Figure 1 (cartoon, rainbow, N blue to C red):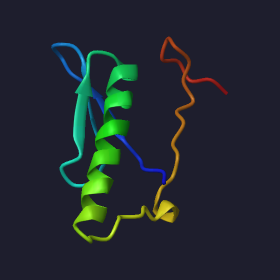
Figure 2: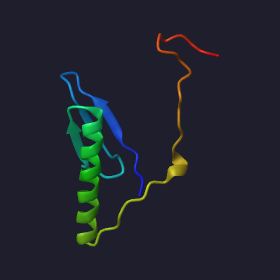
Figure 3: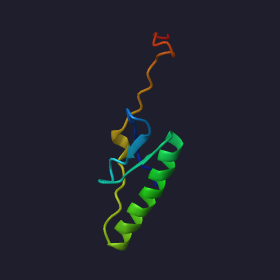
Figure 4: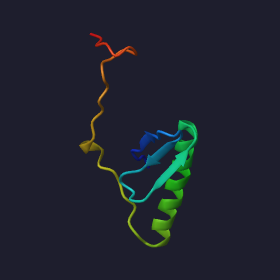
Length: 80
């Protein structure tokens, strides 16, 4: 299964990552890579707990999502 995650950089360092379709599924890490690895493990445990409890496993409706790719270069100037 594929889930959208939201990765947020913390002001004091590190990252917090959540899975919006899985309420309460949150993790963190000192680096992006660590945070993403940790949320992958947290998601697996979350889904195992749902299955063990006989609860349905949420599925994202990918048709509701869109990808926005800003057309900016590293200096913040528009690129045509």
